[in-house]
Amino acid sequence: MGLNMSPTAEGIQRLKELYGRVSKHSHYQIMPDFLADLVDPVALNKRYSRYEVERMEYFQKHVPFQGARVVDVGANTGYFSFASAQAGAAEVVAYEGNREHAEFLRTAAEIYHKPVRVLEEYMDFSGPLPGSPFDIILLLNVLHHVGDDFGDQSLTIDRARREIIKNLNHLADKTKHLILQIGFSWKTNYDFPLFAHGTKGEMIEMFREGVRGTWVIEAIGIAREEDGRTIYRELSAENIMREDRLGEFRNRPIFILKSLRC
Image (cartoon, rainbow, N blue to C red):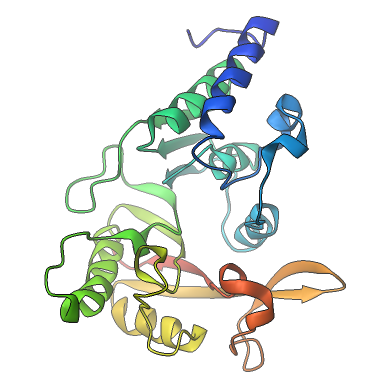
């Protein structure tokens, strides 16, 4: 498919076929608005909301997307890549290692003429980042999947935490802002918690210590449920407490980082 392809019936049917394959692997993200009519919402069969709209609203309160060059790491089916473009980003580079996800994302970008370039690969956190420096890197729920070969189980969690900080700081000279979110468990395996008590305070302290001199934490967003709606508020003495009723995902803070090296 070429870059000049218009959203013909044939092209849209191709997207539907691709989504049919993608949906066998992941319902992790909702569809961006311009793709929402591709499939019956019931067919999405999403068991859990990831609060994409609410998170994007919070991002835009703190970081200017208009005219920005953005990297979306672990783009999945592209919600945040396309939302960044919709928010005015001049260029979005989407890293996605899953073949089906990458093909779906690339095809949607081409058909609908979105400024999204898809790299079918996982980001290398040890090497250069082509095209850098960027304005914004979206690093959402990626870093807790680092390192499958840490050896002795007794060292696993400690080393995983060090690798998370190392990989995060590696990006400091490659972007002006970075938006970060991670889970509380290594590889989302609850048998391997990254924090002894699973609290927001422990996670926040790890990042405050780990990024000192490399990043400034400009804001920390905490999910609250107000009048039946999820909204991200600024960190406070009240909302730093874990709320188990919100589930694990909504207890994950959002960190808005500004580089001291870019």
